[in-house]
Length: 131
Image 1 (tube, one colour):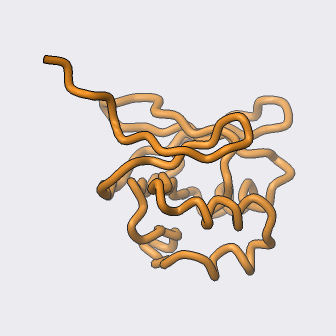
Image 2 (tube, rainbow, N blue to C red):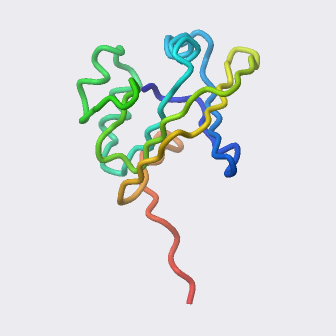
């Protein structure tokens, strides 16, 4: 896992995620070689994991949080959601590689999602229901 540059839903049917990774990042060559990646959406109480991934070496990153391997991919326990994807296509876009991932499995957690904006962390717990 790395702090991604961008991850987006590309298609709902079939489910496809788009992940954009710097071509200089170690993760780029790993994803290209293994043809698979995981996306872990951090829960609101997992800001410490985000902070570690922001600056620590790969060896240190996985010493924080409860990690398990599924299909050889790192999954963070108690995350808001986790996606396992097989690479179905790639495209170079300047300094980045775009990986198109067919979603193989999804695990949905509970609680709010951790957000980062303007140099600060926050949580999103959904919008209030309208009467």
